[in-house]
Length: 304
Ligand code: AMP
Image (cartoon, rainbow, N blue to C red):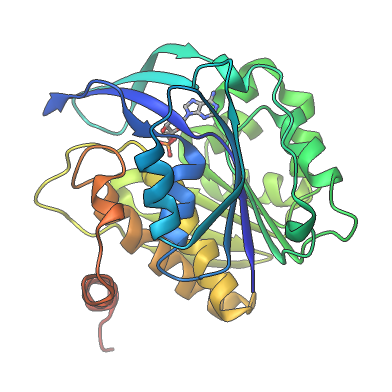
């Protein structure tokens, strides 16, 4: 089944305790689409870049069978830029600078041939733009997933709640779940978020794994303890890409398959953090992915 990802394609400047980068390729949609490309070949990308975005990176997307017809190039603008610095624990970060550039006032255009996509991933963006994107579909996709961030809870809570009410699944990290609901207990927070509309919720806990909630069901997937973590940027998006890529590949949104999707998402995220930017997830083999997924299975399985 086909997947459409809508979100930021960016230049990022990143500082972690292990080093810094100059401008490198980033953006939520870049991570999501690249991660999903290992699962589905019907993988479409909608976003916008400026005249400074390298053609070689568009080629990298295309080499991963990502359809870039929906990636607009604004000849008069510059690509969205984000600069972040991680704290020593690598679980929290500060945004030092954001330049919206071509994202300022951007409204995604959905090419006609993407109208029949069954899986839609709304990457982290202004909630009103996520809503406008969803409203562009004549037939609502079968499974709509949304990612967001604390910034929108600070400045656009009502618009965020309005779009959350319209989607099937949301991914959010633990501190954002607490901010969104005012509940410290993640179990209570999950109940409140599921009451806002989505049937499924994923709460990401960084190096402590991810929780999947649906109705009264809960599933926990640990994060693989890694020897080297260089850069957590994009881990959440890469998780989302692996997760929804697996769902699109199997066209199965049962709870059992959502559990498998959480494992695939976690495996993809574990690769992402091993190098700066998208480098690691641009160069993966199916053998590496298989063996990493097996690592998760072994990590959490035991006999009673
Ligand atoms: P994550 O680490 O999964 O939260 O995602 C990091 C990516 O989000 C970076 O590559 C940034 O380019 C992108 N990003 C940061 N702030 C924003 C924003 N306000 N809107 C859209 N994308 C953003």
